[in-house]
Image (cartoon, rainbow, N blue to C red; front, side, top):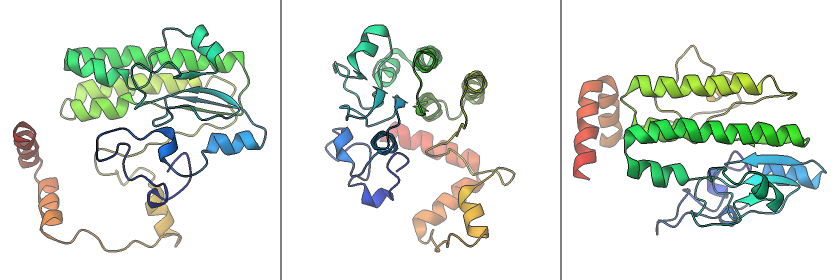
Length: 240
């Protein structure tokens, strides 16, 4: 939805992977990506680690395919000259496959290393060639919060690390920098800017009533009683 600008229902896919657990390919989503539209207008883009970008679709610029790239894929970097320039680039999804097998502690450490390496390649590529649009996707924030959601210090360390990378990026010659998230892991603080809240307050968005039924009532109860919620999800994870 971010890349194509369509409502999820209009994309032709309702999840990154199909019900058969086969990841959706780049052609599994209907529509033109923003970098493809820019290419049609004569602009070059650099897209790094964005999910569901394998196999590569042609557009003016460079692509490092992201999450759901097969581990044995040989076309994960285009054009091929960049693959030769960055032979040790950590391909998308590899941290999931290898990190989880190695244990949580190794996963946390490796995610810092992988993110740092990708970021160094991103800045080097930008320094070597002028791009009108560039997208650097960070998978680690999502990955670590799934596995360390109750380990605050581990998450804080990684988020602080990401803030440092952002500070480095802001020293580069970008005219505009946009930071976006595909979802959160807790309620949005009232002191933070909420796009949907602003749209509703200004009259541009009308919210419909949701959250009826026993399931919604149970979720609201657990949201107010965090210790019970932790116990519930821990037991559910062990059983299912």
